[in-house]
Structures are given as C-alpha cells and as structure tokens.
Image (tube, rainbow, N blue to C red; front, side):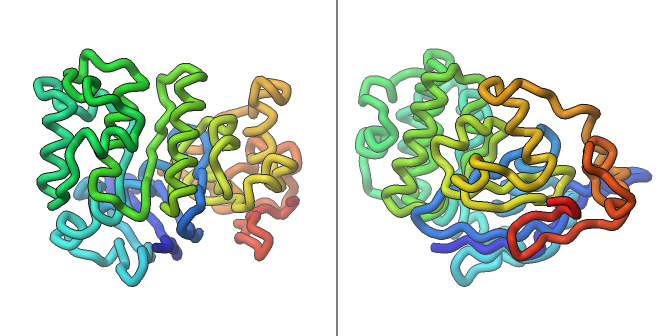
Length: 298
C-alpha cells in the first residue's frame, strides 16, 4: 500500500504567534522501500509523522493530503483513524519506547492487549519472535528491559496489527552503536518483507544502513529528496551537504549558526543566513525542482 503525501502543511496556533511546523511536504513511499526523513531537531520530522496518524494537539491546523491507498489520512475523521488506521494500516514505533510502555504491566500483557484490541489471533510469543524477542523477555516489566529490549517490544507492538506501513520515530535515540545497527537491520527486514517503512532520524549514519530514499527537512520544508545512493555519493542542497560533513566519518565540520524560529521564518530561503553560497537570489523562496532539490544553487 503506497503512501503519497501531497502539499501537507501543519501550523500550530499559539497566543500571538503561529508555528510553521511543516510546509508543503510532498513525497511518495512505496511497498518494500524505506524512506528516511532526516534533519536537525525541531525541523518538523516528528510533527509530520504525528499528522499522518492524527495524533496532533487541538491547536494544530493540518492542510493538504496524505493518501494511504484510497484513504486520505488528513481528511479522515477520528473514528476512522482510531478503528482502521492506527495499528492496522500504520504501526508506530515511538521515540523512547520504554517511556511509552505502562510501567506496572509486563511486556506480554501489553502485547496481548494490543493483539486483542486489533482483533488478531496470533499468540504474543509469535509476534514477539518476529521482533527478535524470546518468550521469557515478554515476562519482564519495562524497568527490567534494556534499551535494545524496549526497542524490540516497541517493534512488536507496531507489528501486532500486521500493518503495511511502519513509522519509526527516532528509533535509535539513546541506543549505543551495536543496538542502532540491530534496530536498523530489523527495519530493513520489514522492508524486505514488503512493508513500507518511514524512518524519522537525525542519524544519517543509521539512515545509510536502511534507507532506499532520503528526504532532508529544514525549517519545516523538504529541501532535498533523492535515492539514498545518490544522496550519500553527493547531496545537492547546501544544508544536506552540511549534515553529511558534520558526521565524524566525514570531517566533523558543524553547520554554522542556528535554524530559524518557526514562528518567524524568512520570506526567502530559510537556510540563507547559514549558507556560504547565499546570493541575492536566495531572497526568493526556492521551489522543489523536478530533480528533487529546492535550492537556487543546487
């Protein structure tokens, strides 16, 4: 089942201000592929994921479309999202999985409840095994789980309804490198089984292990969208190049300056104040080209 996001925008209404969290996002994600949505913290990645699931607070205004098969997730009422989408069509792996587990119930109890509510007949042990868990792991409480185990429990909960789309929101946060690699390998396995996987991350090294395509966000906008191989061989947007150059394996060179406030975005290119290539042309907002980059100097 293909996900097609078309002109998705999210605004948060605050007293005396509007937060432009996501602006005119457009991308497609097909079955059997993984799209990594990358960018600095606060650029709108997680907001986009929550918009797909209808999990934003009441002061959020969402416009545009997000088609999952024939269903527009943006226009769908809460009853449809709760009964048909969450868990059944989209499985969510949240940030900091241990914090999202009920502390006074075992992993087995929580997985069994998810299966029951989703109308599934599989045993918890069967679903847990697909996420790399042993039966005895399910009998632990959240505080008894290591970071890797908590991540696997979150994966099992996301898989409980056998959804065609998995959204993994910063799945490697707080994990050491071996666990990061294991988590990425698990997400890659889900793709190879035919699922579509959307990974939200600031860890480009992890994204390189799993992604078929890369979308780079800056200040709420997707500024580059390309196949992963082409991206890591040579990104075209100055911000995307800066993200790669900041990796320890690629020079460890930080991007100067700070991202703009999402309540006061500039009229032109939001990256202009931090960009060494900026010219007067950057005072006009660049549009996404047919080659997948939004920059006057790509």
